[in-house]
Amino acid sequence: MAIRRVRPGKVLVGPQMSRRDFMKLTGTGLAGVALLGTAGCGSIFEGGGGGSVKKTDTLNVNLTTEASDLNSATTSDAYSFNVLTNTNEGLYRLDQNQNPQPASAEGVETSKDELTYEFTLRDGVIWSNGDPLTSHDFKYAWLHVLDPKTAADYAYIISSFVKGADEYNTDKAGADAVAIETPDDKTIRVELLSKSPFFLGLTSFVTYFPLNQEFVEKMGDEYALDGDHLLYNGPYTMTAGSQGGGSTIVLQKNAKYWDKDNVAVKTLNFRIVKDNDTGINLYEAGDLAITFLTGDSVKQFQDNPNFFRQVQPFTVYGRLNQHAPGLDNLNIRKALMIGFDREALTDKVLQDGSIPAYGFVPPAITPGPGNQTFRQANGDLVPKDVDSARALWEKGVEEVGEEPKLTALFADDTAGRDLATYFKDQYKKNLGFDLGVEIITFDAALDRVDAEDYQINYSFGWIGDYDDPMTFMDLYLSDSPFNNSFFENEEYDRLIKEAQTTSDLQLRMQNMLKAERILIAQAGTVPVFYNAVSGLIKPYFENYTPHAFGGDDYKYAKIKG
Image 1 (cartoon, rainbow, N blue to C red):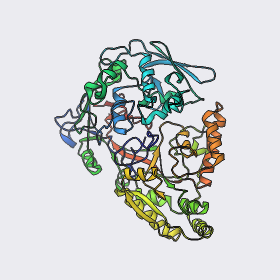
Image 2: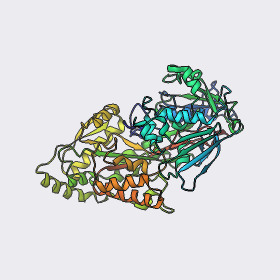
Image 3: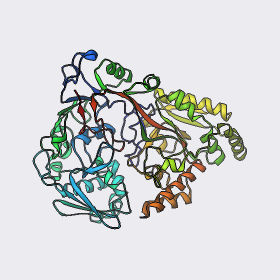
């Protein structure tokens, strides 16, 4: 989850940690999902590191930074997602295996053409104030997200799939054009633009959460500013803390939640521990139930029985501005794409378990043809012969008429500076040219890229919003607001747009596979690495459930003791 800025909601990476920037290049974007136990504060421990585990029903969770927007219609940052995933829920909820399961809805019926979904709400589901939860709450919420006046970052995650939604969101039609019907209080019927086998999973996404119209309008501008100005239909309610505030956000088990009998932890305290080394020390002292690892610490602990690694649906990649002199040349772009050692980068520089990227769509995206994932089916597309890059560079220079002077943007953190040093060295060694380096803040990098004021950008990447290759492949459509590289290919556009509209799922997948091969063959992007998160988790903390396409879910959490 990360952010970008035009169609926010995806993930680029940077310091403010919005969903687009949620996963920083440091690989520490998730290093705050640590559960912190401290004596006298609902600790899950007694006696520090050497003491025995005490059975308790409270978890202290490290959010790492403030939740900047607790309005489910407009939020796009990872921290707010972590809070809202636990206080509210959609028609479906992801289980511990990342599969959508009935939540506010008891089930769904689909039409034969798989374009119409009819959800039926559970009997007796209510809001935390006692109001009944109805189908109208979902319709109101979705239309509110799509309303052009709302300017919601994640509007696209509805408008890309629901018939008529894009027309409303782009102010080309009214709300009546959106194919959402509520024939009664318990039924909501949705018509899609094309077959979308991942749609049930989307209904678990924060942007699809319901809103109580009467409450929202009564709160006005104060809606979602703190716990008293929110309503809840999920496992927890928010009893302390505020939007954008630095104090602890406290969540208490929701006594009116339909599935409260299966919520084991009664209290969640979302706190902040920013330093990764401090996290390791707290973990080893017995004051931390889970912590995340970066750099040398990954190798240090990778043989520990409590070590874990999660490969994220997140690709860090370079953007080559094809409007910049020299970068309109295919051989120059190919040389830049091939001319660095990815294995050495991940093994010797990053050292966090990240994986070299030889394709654009990451291996954590599971759909693909037959029993294969997309990455397995298309394999490694970027040539691994780094030595071949110099000949491409020299040929490109000859075609251009002179060696282009190129500068790359890198993030202003430790990992970004390490990457800058590495790329400068690799391009000098393998291509024979001096790469200019500009260290820049994430926000400044976004502004520069959006303004087309850059040549090469290695300062952020992209994390998928849903489990399908399209969450990556549509980025390089020639009319995509995220295509700031200005890659244009008619066949690529044809393949992806057909994939977006066809109901033939085999054709859809084959089109995306072909399109990725075109993207790499034309060096339209420079895949660098697939981000991984590594950490340590105490054996008594059970059912930790991070969702790659949503917030971390503590509904399933248990403490064994």
